Length: 68
Image (tube, rainbow, N blue to C red; front, side, top):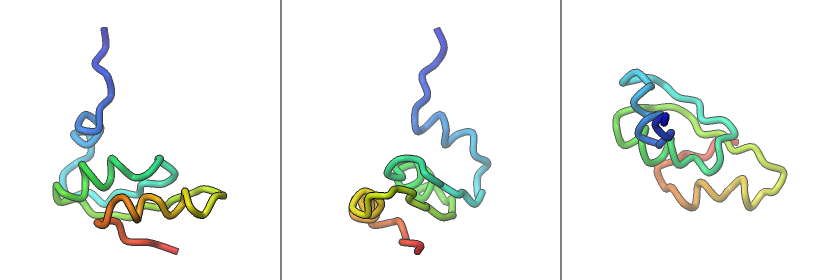
């Protein structure tokens, strides 16, 4: 059986020090919990017609900078 994809598995595939664009990937959990705390930089961009859902990641993860 193949190994399940986890946040840590995906984060391990990104070369250390990379800049990351997290575009339309849910609420930014991978970016906020695995990449930013481990020295990565980049941008999270929320894509949703519902403004409350689009703003949710910035309420959940104070480490994200809002980009408009």
